[in-house]
Length: 94
Image 1 (cartoon, helix red, strand yellow):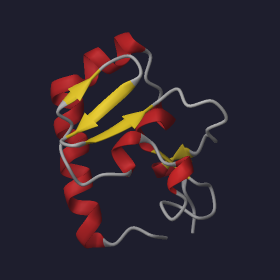
Image 2 (cartoon, one colour; image 1 turned 30 degrees about the vertical axis):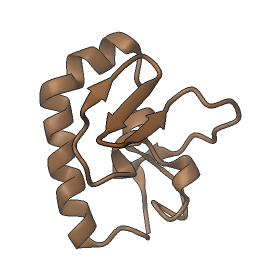
Image 3 (tube, one colour; image 1 turned 180 degrees about the vertical axis):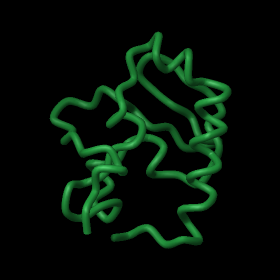
Image 4 (cartoon, one colour; image 1 turned 60 degrees about the horizontal axis):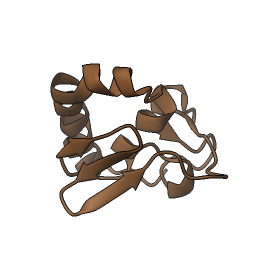
């Protein structure tokens, strides 16, 4: 829920681009699968508070550090106290 095919295609392409350009760095920094690809277990991407950095934006990653990912003018902060943890999008069942 909350993710149309029109929105999914650029997110998918951007995720592949991220893995090619920043995958090794993300691993070094300790980014988890849910930090990147998490979604809410029943509401999918409709609950942005459970979403990982690559599930929130249709924009390419432009920078990565241990605690944040930049998508142009938008920044995703990984270590926000109390942030709920989602499940990997490929485990989501409708």
